[in-house]
Image 1 (cartoon, rainbow, N blue to C red):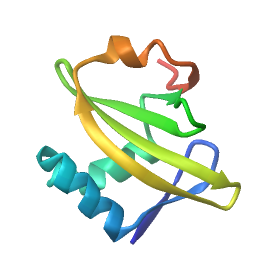
Image 2 (image 1 turned 120 degrees about the vertical axis):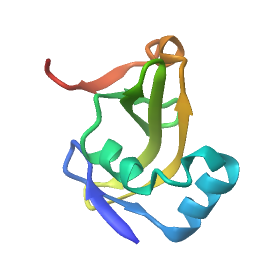
Image 3 (image 1 turned 90 degrees about the vertical axis):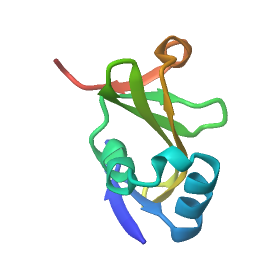
Image 4 (image 1 turned 135 degrees about the vertical axis):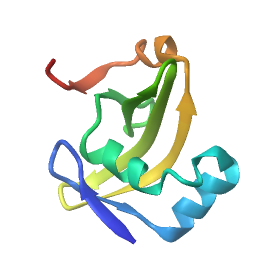
Length: 103
């Protein structure tokens, strides 16, 4: 199990069972393990989810973004819920922006 730190400096875990869930539901992410971790620690933008989770987003290629959904349980622990690829940034941009990389 790998752990990275979120932008709020919270350790975020990617347990093996979560990775299995992600790749079973989104087989196109099978080779993206380290990218999923990197998006949590170094995203382009973070949006607020509807239930308190965070959606970290990084641009991958033209019209393709990697979204990693994670929860910060407290200041000392958090975990990845799921991840997916999307081309629909407009839908994500309707959410409240928590953090954005300075250009």
